[in-house]
Amino acid sequence: MGNKTKIIIAGGIVGIISVLLVYFGNPANMGFCIACFLRDIAGGIGLHRAEVVQYIRPEIIGLIVGASILALKNKEFQSRGGSSPFIRFMLGIVVMIGALVFLGCPLRMVLRLGGGDLNALLGIAGFVSGIWIGVKFLNKGFNLKRNYKVTKIEGYVFPGVSIGLLVLLIASPAFIFFSESGPGSLRAPIAISLLAGLIVGALAQRTRLCMVGGTRDMMLFNNSHLLVGFISIIVFSFIANLSFGFFNLGFADQPIAHTDGLWNFLGMAVVGWGSVLLGGCPLRQLILSGEGNIDSVISIMGMIMGAAIAHNFGLASSGAGATFNGQVAVVICFIFLWIISYSNSEISVKK
Amino acid sequence: MDKIDTSGMSCPQPVLMTKKGIEKSPEGVDVIVDNNVARENVESFLKHSGYNVSIKELEDSFLIEARK
Image (cartoon, rainbow over all chains, first blue to last red; front, side, top):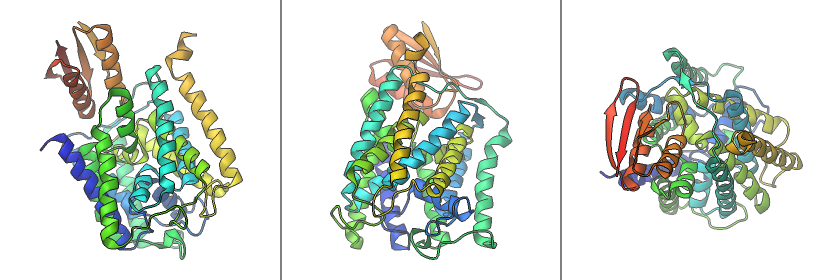
């Protein structure tokens, strides 16, 4: 089977499983959303107190463990780290803030489009613009320096911790939070969510599926491989949404979305730019974190911190639109991204 | 032959470094990669750019030799 066929199939399965998760109880157009689910986990363990978005999402655990299992099986598990750790942590925060202003990570962005939510088009336009800026800096030599081998056990700790989260979810001690209303209360049964995560985690590990990589590689190398996966998710989730009767075309009254076009655009521009600097979208970071990549683990930790900040400081948007605090935060994120991009590229080294 | 060591670099740096390498010495390059993702990406990039590619497995890495 050709690589292109593989990634079309993988994207198709991701699109269909995402819609099935909605059928089994997940919020609409949110079969998967790495940003939203990390945010729910941050709430589930009490890092923020936004009562409507607290739940230890088994999909995330499945994605990490699924990637780990396949990476171990294929001898691709490599414990590595040490490439600009704190910058990556901060970029994780930035990407999460952008995603929560838009209301979704790049994966949910395409799932929203597949569900008929046209606000996602503004998000995609912003996302592509953000990637374009990031690519400009890549071409000017931007990089976060190399990683190094670390001890084997270092790579196993994060998948281990995610299994620990599963134990917490199942045991549900009193200190774990579960939303009783809102998106956090909408969830597919644990076993189904976990299985979905495992399948998609393994597929994404195998095919290197990455939402930001598609547009980036097209701009950098004229290589459409990953972009085909991105488009496949849209097409197959669209078909699945149509067949389940979930498809609802328009801008207004879309589930867990707002119609504030400018901030949909700018939020995703932050996500696109930040993800290019990190070397992959939130989904890809999660998969790499399951393969022993500590730099990606640090990025995920940044995203969880970013989610807590976004809700504690009132940065996250709601159905009513972006908040003033969120708008200020997006501007700060752009300044931060520019400083990091500039200072890590060859333009600044030459001077 | 120009030798490019991409060890430890994350996506998409190995391919970017290779791209710069063949711009500098179009007759061919030797690229060291230390993981499968970079190996696949660099190999496919070089093949698409019209090079003959051979890969040698080293202890902890791969040596990709690209020639016109």
